[in-house]
Image (spheres, rainbow, N blue to C red):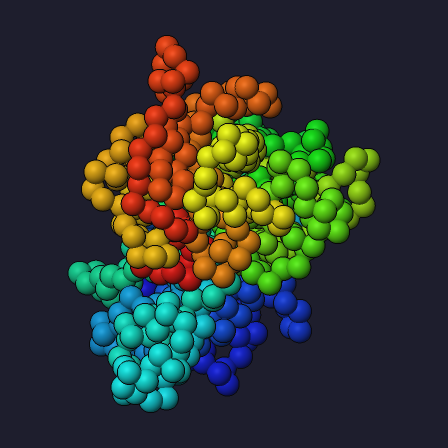
Length: 572
């Protein structure tokens, strides 16, 4: 086993010199490995102090298959040199100090492979990396401030909750407008000796680079997404696992002239092999469909999305793992008022209208980059520049109904129903009346949820402190399928300031796509209004039996659904 090397990389120590020692394709004065520099820059932002380095042999179980594949591609043994690099926030100089490190001291664990090509010399790439979610390192100058005073200083409750968890000089705060929905808790370790392993955990995402010899950007995107899915407990997958599925052996079938990457069919084949279904949207066939709406609804559902766009050299693919959100955005409401006056029965805005960036991994540049939503163009004829071509959402098996249909149905059904109630002389509750008569666009936030995940959200209280009874929870959940589309309907001020909703609209997932209103009207499952739940039984023999109403204790606007119950800043 190789000896661990401890290097100080805190402020005053150059990362440019550091990268040159471990990425052999770096040249004097030229930063070649952009992703490596990005990783180090993130570490600097998060107040890194030490890098723990281990040189690993080509026969190491983590990289042996990859090294064999590279040699197969060239038809002879290829010289390589690889390193495992772990970044920590503490100053560490010995194994004794490593044993004292806690999980929150670890920022990233990465493996870098260098191989010497016969034609172009050394090539370096990040074969694998697990990187903590981006966070702000803050120094608590006086952490003995009485709790009664904390509310005066840290008035943002999630911030207060996070700071109270720690009792030393330094603490971390997730970036407040970054919502990285695709993340998980990775189990990691450092081997200190043949007999001793120090284990730790990193809450973050997986990243890897293509080497353009045995893997391309599609491999990097698949590995990053599949390995980061929170509910996946199996071992990580690597590019050679993908090549085996699509029958790339680098001898008879190889990446090169005439085959620059994986097809969408092959991407779907790989995902199916690991138990996932997909929904593909080709924006070149439907340029009026805003790509950000498709991407956002699935990201909100914790379903990663592969985004394919054109470049000067062809096509590139990146995984989308999250988004940023600007609650002070002018455009969503202004364009409704100035362009159409806010009229019409479908006067609504998808919550994606307030998204200003998608958070992506780009294997050419690195992890956790913010892609401005207007950086990718749409249109026919093709527009010069970076043009979005298609997107592939990774979804649970059995889901066939698209998100756009569920959201459109939520607007058609709820607004028509409310209008009918008003025309019939029925007196609506205060908040339903505001939704029905709002001159401003109503906000619809649509996501794919499991019944179990939704059940957890029923423990909240509405704005007036009312809660669901156990009987009401049972009624809400009893007829829901394992997965369904949920559209949360709110007013702009409630959504952006209070993070609350007025109406929940539940829609089926097992139907083929449809644009017909009458079919959409048969596919909704139930609607929860303040005071009442309306259920639909399409198998009923009479119209009177088709709709069933149940009284509810919730009388006001109610908190938005959150996956991340313990870390509010990770979820919107």
